[in-house]
Length: 59
Image 1 (cartoon, rainbow, N blue to C red):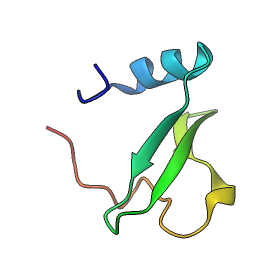
Image 2 (cartoon, rainbow, N blue to C red; image 1 turned 180 degrees about the vertical axis):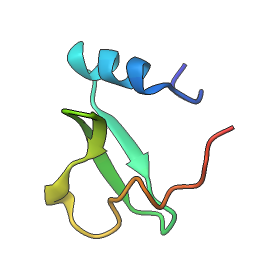
Image 3 (cartoon, rainbow, N blue to C red; image 1 turned 45 degrees about the horizontal axis):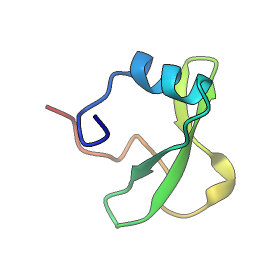
């Protein structure tokens, strides 16, 4: 399951259940994912390579 492509709803559910999710950036950095009003986002306090907008499209 953890190697699959997740929907935003699946990620939100996992975070709400206490799981910690991370996104890998194109430069090899990673950022913890947190809930936001509009869905999910990378935690802003990680610094560096933590934007989800620069990740390649899935699928």
